[in-house]
Length: 140
Image (cartoon, rainbow, N blue to C red; front, top):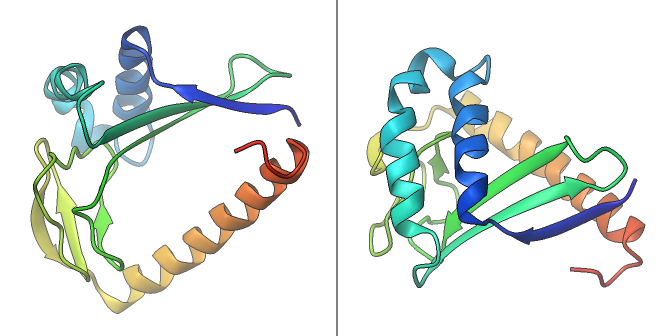
């Protein structure tokens, strides 16, 4: 597997929004949020504290993963929903779920959600380790 990452560019925004809007787990919730998400990403892209990346499989150029986040503001144990945008300067406390554009705390996480999030995190860490190894160890 040949993986690289790069900073998200303005021309990536439409594809990122489409992926969120069409995802089978989220489309009913987020399809109507496509335009606000597009506007938020356009406004935040390149601003201080906002980070957006595209991870690409070089062996299959159509395989991409978009990663978006902000520096700080999301405490350990908090969860930000797919498509949500946490604006710089806002905070999501531990144990809370934030949704929307801009992201707002919606409710506390249930114990089952907290368990599933931990399992998912562990899978992503394992994938990160595989990708790092494929890049020669220090490619990040």
